[in-house]
Amino acid sequence: MTFFGTLLALCVLYKVASSSAIPDEQVKIIEGLKNTTQSIIADLNRYEEKLQSDVKLKINQVKVDALGRMDGIVYYVIHGIETAVSAVNITGSDAESCHQTAKASLGKLNETAYHNFNKCVPISLSAVDPLLKNITSAIQIAGKISKNLDNILSDCSSAKQPATEKCVVLKIQDYQLSIKELQISVSKLKNAQFSAIKNAKIAARSCHAKIVYAMRVEATFKIYRDANLCIRSIYKAGF
Image (cartoon, rainbow, N blue to C red; front, side):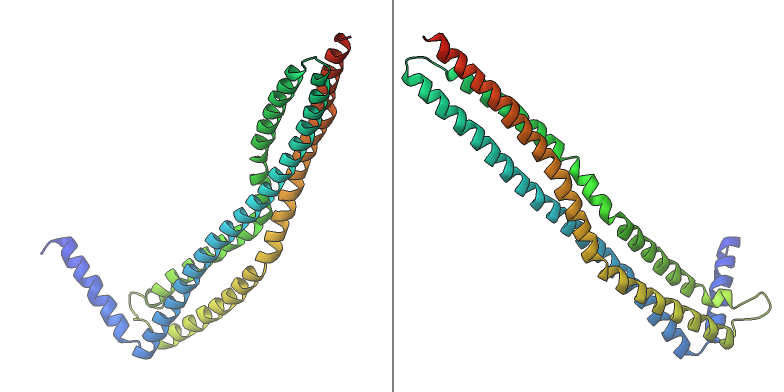
């Protein structure tokens, strides 16, 4: 047997000897606590994934609403221009060029606004960043407890003294308390999702509203006005 093989065998024998000094009941309790911490980690990972999915869904809903308002603005401007163009065309003049120019300008304006909507995503998601950081911290704490549970026997042992039942019991009590405190924290984290999602939605609405407002001002006070000036110019030139 090689040196490393001998060393490995001695380590295994040492662990078995140490474990045998601890009642099976305590070993079962340790395994149960480890299972609890792993369940907490799995639950938090699912919660984090669902939270991010729910927030993105809310942000997308706000975006869809904003696009609907933009469509209404475009319809209002285009309808008004088409009405004016039709009125001028009846007189024998052709103001269709004004209509086409306005449509092209509105198309570019829409593209710009839609592109700017992408900036609202990180702004909105930042509202849930504190909660996500707390979830990550809770996962790390659970992982650390699980690792410490694996090391109870070695922590309660020394080169001359195998793990004592008293030390193991005290360690178990400490980790039971830590897990209880963690479960309370996890419960609070889950309750915080409602306000976090609400804040993300408020941030999304504010961001999208500013973009829609800027688009409306450009469409009605610039593009619509320029189109009307174009139509009037053609109308006057016809006389």
